[in-house]
Length: 383
Image (cartoon, rainbow, N blue to C red; front, side, top):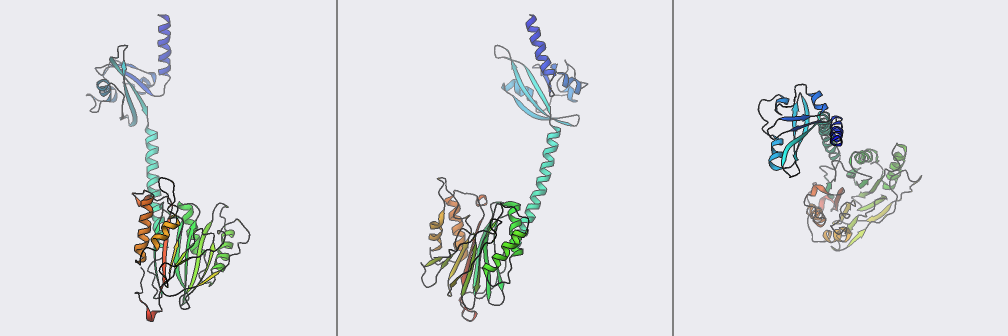
């Protein structure tokens, strides 16, 4: 008997040492035991009283989890407000050696600070979501809009995997007869990546008629800024003479080559492979060079980032360049239709029912060279 008493006292000492409130109820809602933390925290709580009297009620709680514990024979949990504090209440049945339920033990944990912290985090998250939404609208406002040129047609798709994208593209006039166009992909996603796209758009010199000269200048500006060694920009930049139908281009590490689909043969295409390192802090002098090609009316140029071809299916197989090219060569459709078909096909290939859940940013653009204005076969508008 002495060992039993010692064991009982030892268990009581453990329970009394707990920060949580602990009490035991009989099957008639009477309190038959409570630990020191609960008796100190609830001065009016007494053994022998009803469990609901201790929290200022004269009738049982509507959602009495202790009765549920007795009825169902398992644990139940709820929240309770006591003296302007929030408690997590866990009720569990106590069984005898025969497996009969003889009482219920309740453990009450004060979660007020946790709940307040959760509410604070939710409020902060709401502010961040609003900020990200505003930042996304600002980033999207920097994308091409209302491009109008009788000698060229332009259309694009821009989808980001997060609120803010690391892909970017722009098209703009240079003087009366030249057109500048670039597609870029920066390191990472989210806010840091979006800041790099803003830097790119605001820093690239749009007055130069040499893409390589503009990229070399952009490289110097990047290295004069306080960007980290892990940040970089890849960009393929081209300048087109709309009257002479010529194209000069340069590449800063963009790892997918644009296609040229020649109007002379609907199945004829070229890849504009051109070496170059990303805009980064990795070397002292990048040495960008210009490439050159002739264009004819009806030629279509396709620019893109690697997000579309790197989509993977359940077997970890990439969508790839071959599938992309097959869709690009599939009939003479309007560019917007082709772009939408490519995006849909890649998402289906990757098993994405929700196209907003793409794993990487996806950017694609078509530019078509038209006849001079007096012989244009298409309306002068933005596709």
